[in-house]
Length: 567
Image 1 (cartoon, rainbow, N blue to C red):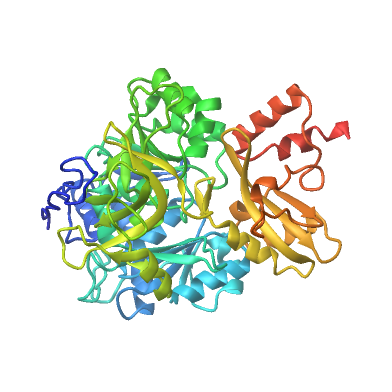
Image 2: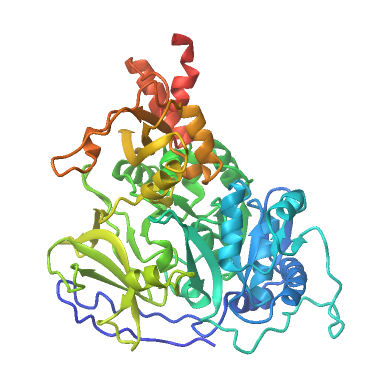
């Protein structure tokens, strides 16, 4: 059923009139898979998902996912129970997550490239009742997890009370729009990852309620994000809940030229890129974006120069800067890029439909015309952090402004200010959290892991931008005894996802300190050969470094390796 809600005029000072009057109509009382079922009924023979090797219609995808659902529902006995999905970016992964939802469970994306220790933690923390996986990953899944493993290559017989058609399995009566849809993990400052619990309503408020950003039945939507990166929420459900065709880019870290090939072969028209990947696409594959009618940039600061180049090359393409933490269900604010001065940062804009935004001080009081913390309300606010009541209470607070009694605000920790144009400008973080390739990383979590190495007496991890527009993690270590960067990197890689592994390790005898005794991060040295190899010293080498940084979304380490004949 479709209902209308109204958020009312914003009482907080310092915001434009009607700023938070953002309510739109969407299926507020439905679930993701119920909305998908409507598209199946409307377009059963339309293409639903295509990876270049295989294509499924909406009817076929519905049937395969219902088969998964029948198997999963035998292992759960109530709402809000979790099932892990260990799968590459693929058609099979789409089948798996849709099947888990149909069964009345929430899916937990499990990246096969993650260290075993982290995968086990995620499964145990969520209380996963099972893990659904692809055939080539089934042996690893059975080695890692102590729960039933369901292979997607295996099939289940039809339920005895059904005729084998692809209708939905029976779910518990308490299942609905406030039920858990998925749990995604972000980096935690305590060294423990935080599982963000997202409900169905939060997803639908975005992919069905955000007019102007919703794919249509004539669109082809690119799926290029990892399942554990919440941009995939827009890609997968934005396509499948709106009758569009989902184009799955092959698994692996996206290479911009390979992505361009996928775009051109499938005539992609809508896509959400991490800002780093979008910068690469503009640098090396700008022509391929000409088929797009809508490009969204997420995950980090969008470069003004790249946004301008994209708009100038393809004036018919809408370019939208989308801001939002995982805790706000992908996106909280949007800004459609128009004509910007060359030195003007791209704003993060205004509230997404069905979302409320406030700029508050440390006591959660509105600030007018000043810098403050951005707090998010509305239907997209997550339930909280799984099994972390104190962290949830600290970040998810009572909403004193919203029209709905019992509403909550999420404290983003991001500093913003209101521009004269009536748009929000992002100014940085209250803490040390950074974005690396679109993923949120708490450097203190990486440092906490490093200090677990017996040779490390103290560790500090910072984000550096030694090449403009390309941020990297650098670890500084005070060693208890001799240790080299190779061993430290191998140690961290065995415990953390690849995007959290520092690209440079610098071993120091002592850390520089400020007058008050804190580590002076501004005085930490630029990495040299001890961390990542010799620095690039000529202009030609620096140009090669910048090129590799753009292509590989990394720092100049690869260039140093390619140029190692100098040493």
